[in-house]
Length: 509
Image (cartoon, rainbow, N blue to C red; front, top):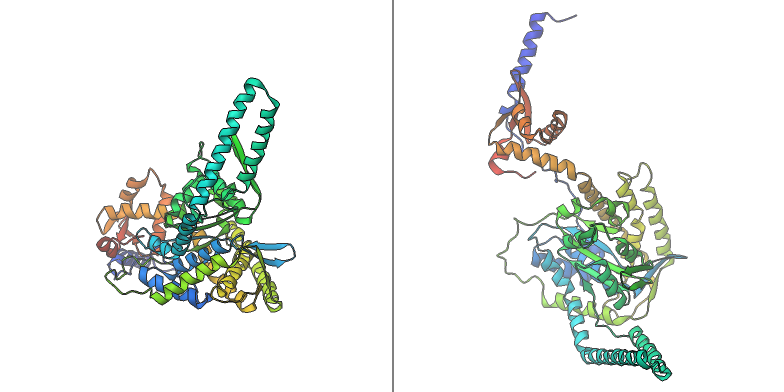
């Protein structure tokens, strides 16, 4: 039975009055858009000497263990690349190089963290360069003299065309080629913000192995995206090929091309979150991003005890780390192939099957095409890490076996949930960049008014050059869901009530 008209009007009016009063209740704290709980890096996968160093450095720098753990993996991979590979099956083997990327805000301790892990390699570089100083100088003088003699003979031959001059020129050329081929180069592990051409030259000089390890990874990303290119286009091919050791030729105008037969690059980039948000379509479509292990740890900035003078990195822990790294640097020369034991091989099959299931239509790695493409390389990452953990287990041992145990592979497997969760968060950040910017823009306009109540019509006038009414409504609904605002009617006018917490504390979105 229909309600009487007078009663219906009273109910509607009461509902309207109630809605108009919604802003008077006790407001909840706004929910930040980046508020997401991600797992911490499981440092227990590392052997004692490395785990203790990671934990000590993290306390000393007051940074998350995630930064130290990725730094440690990168140092292991830099040492192990071209010294070890891991055989997965038949014709499938993996080099132990890695691409890793972690986010941390400016001033968050990125540089101090990396410095602690790089130090033994930087020391090794300096010592080797000093030891080779005389030999390198003699080599340079010898080559300079040969080139000068050949140039002189070429001039003489141009004037007189004597056959003896040509024979000597040919002999000198052969000697120069031989010396250049066997040329001793000053050993070098690291480079940073350079062109692809220069990186190719370094790879050629350093036995096709190089690492980019920097706390200013944003510059490297901009570089790869085309910073040094004449037309601003991405020069990404070398970075793709050098992850998998694929042959590549780098053509140079007016100069001999650089031919790399099996180059391997390691990358450890610490960046600010806006760099991840800005990764362009080329990076996504060509598979560059999918090669990385990601980490988005929470920042400690604002919660650190910077006046703490405790020496967290004890002499014993530091000495153990330096000794282990030095032993690894000096222990092996020729390429060693690691293989799984029979028990580990069964676990390997299980890991492959589990990861394949994650790529099904209803699997956790099918949320987006970029995530799916990243997941297609998950096995590769797991087996590389298993190889690195195996090498690290023997860093302080007098013996070594190339057989990787089930226990070691299980430790690498334990990193899968971490890698997946942080990859999901990373690709979520990339996808939500535009939406986040819209939310930030509207919220800033609201806060700028310094009012607890704003007519929606007035807000629209402020932003209509960028938002139509439908788009504005979508953003306001999102802000309301997160308790930044409430929308209501006041008479016939639509109004926006602003959460006092936002106005008082300037809460970040």
